[in-house]
Length: 360
Image 1 (cartoon, rainbow, N blue to C red):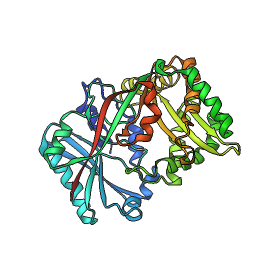
Image 2 (cartoon, rainbow, N blue to C red; image 1 turned 45 degrees about the horizontal axis):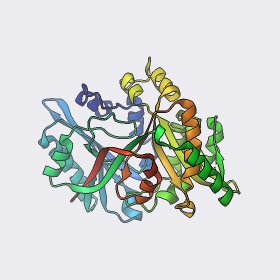
Image 3 (tube, helix red, strand yellow; image 1 turned 180 degrees about the vertical axis):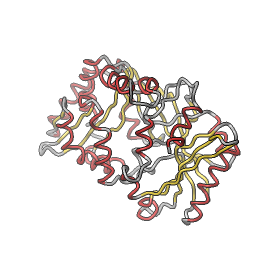
Image 4 (cartoon, rainbow, N blue to C red; image 1 turned 30 degrees about the vertical axis):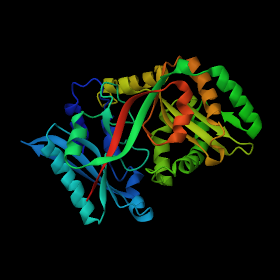
């Protein structure tokens, strides 16, 4: 498993845009004893060998909730990396197809992870931009390999960024105050992680309601929520998690922003010790770029401008921290609701990524 996880370290050895994972975290992520995603999913891991050396890797995934409850007969693949040899890509995808046939599935889609909290899509544009800890990076030939093997575009995702200085703080403060009065809402800010934890389960209920209409959505179990809480919440600056509650203290909107760990992760070279942890903690405290990880509004409050309250909260925090760039995670190109949220900030699309599909 360690060889599987470390293969990209050689593939992207001299690439200044690739962001490595922490090796131990990645190995743990694939351990059924540690990651509850395996309660509802199966995964098989493959490497391709040439002259005794690893030249490619892939994970073949079946999300059983998706297959049995949603009746979507999809064979997933993810963590796909290859040298520039289409025969390597072909042999790896043949294994995915075999498993799909064995389980009477109808089509293959990838690269995608187990669910909506995982990385998604092959990069098709924006190879000269630094990656993030929550996206895959890849060489330009990945797209060519997939298309030559008969895979076609399934979903396209846009990655956008904007300068924090584009945000009109006065405007959002005024709108936020109007909305708070009109709908009897309250903004919650935090300085301690322990104060956030009681709201996390409720946050995922809002997440579920807000994202369930998207074509890519698969529900996240309580065990996976607990896993996420343990793995990530403690590592995110509490000041970067914002909630909005109604008059009964019920959560109706949330956002999670992460400091950019990209450069810190490059310095760690995949290891927390001896100095990796120092680089990450330094980025957590001092990074001037941030990544919007998740944002969700209860459907009952959508199209009412409630996101303005969240942006008002962030403008105050970001100004204090001297934030320069705001980077957004991949968003479906047909997600019109999310486009409206960001349109006032003059966002620039700097990357595009895609999932590809092929009938089995």
